[in-house]
Length: 421
Image (cartoon, rainbow, N blue to C red; front, side, top):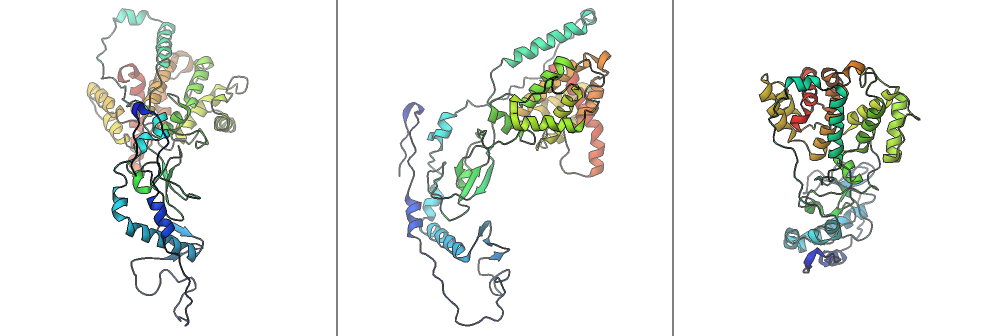
């Protein structure tokens, strides 16, 4: 069945293809045959396999009957599903092999209504910044430098929200009632586990079609149930923000009333109240109240921010980029080390890079009040090193050795945030 492509990207309902559905309707039904003689060696639930030989299948039981990924309540359902699959894949083998060639995906509502311009990373080339005259640098007060940094941060806030790329989070799914693939428009056959569903946006496709779907997941808030422990890119796309609201709201609160607090980020807040802040964000999102009226101790807010980064399933400095950052931190020559860190930053997903940039600018402003809060870049590096980056699975001794490089890296990011980002 041909798909009509409409001009000017006008959305029209897709034409669902019925051929595979018709084949499922034609598939033979199972018929129970009672064995007339007792098989002495028959196990209670047919054991791990039927008989003593493997006949191109393996059938198991652990409370449910299953073959591979599919699990059934009864043998009848298992055989029914097997007959459907065998019938369709025999009758339509060539058709199935070609069904991803002319997909409808580019013309269905999901893609048309949420079409985004191609994302490009906005990480500039490492700039050669000419040092200010020493007299001018010495003459500027911390307040004047802070005002300049705040002004720059405010200007950046007004930038257009970037369109981040996100991979779909597909999971094997059992669809109740007839369902059609939203990539190829063909029927999803079988009784259970007919295809996969994106846990973040709800897109339904065949398992084989999922490999062809572009990385354009736009999470739906009804699928994103929490803020903490949620993938960072998933969260910002679901809420259509540049950064996680936890980061923006906590930093705003800290800068409003906490920059002068001694031991900022080093001193721990009361753990039960930090957990309360976490629950408030998970429950209320951007409407969570973290004001001084509710949490007078600023260390509770700094603790909640650190907890957010620790709870990320993929750290802010991702597992993929981690080795590159550690290698960069080990380079002895300063300029070469800086250049290597800049290259490593390009490996971060855009949402991670944007959040890291915002956090480093904030921590730079924290260091401008070092006389009051006693927190310089080195101290902040000790706090945030293991918070922002975690080693992929490796030898415990090697991970322990990495701690000093994590500290050095964060210290360098804070000191050079205006150059690196």
